[in-house]
Structures are given as structure tokens and as C-alpha cells.
Image (spheres, rainbow, N blue to C red):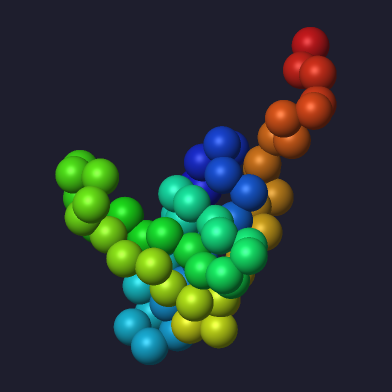
Length: 66
């Protein structure tokens, strides 16, 4: 199950590896794939290198949960 905290799950086209992007840079059209605990242990992938899947369980920040 995908976390409710992130709006998207990505799949890298070349490897088929699925991940939750921790940062999305819309201006440069890139997503950050974290590969470990260290903050610099990851890589930027271009939007065209991944397939986005919307998380149906994502709770919008503006929603009020009662």
C-alpha cells in the first residue's frame, strides 16, 4: 500500500523500479529518488524517465479530517 502522505508513486521506465519521490521539481521537470538514509544518497530523474501513478489514498493537505 502506498503511503497516504505522498501524492504520487513513480516507476522508472528503464529499470521498472518503483519508488515514492521525496521531492518534485516542477520547474525543471524532475523527481528525486532517495536511495538511502543520507540526504545526498539519491538521484534526480526527468519526468520522461518515469511513469507517474496517482495515489488514490492521498489526503490533500487542505482537507479537514474529522
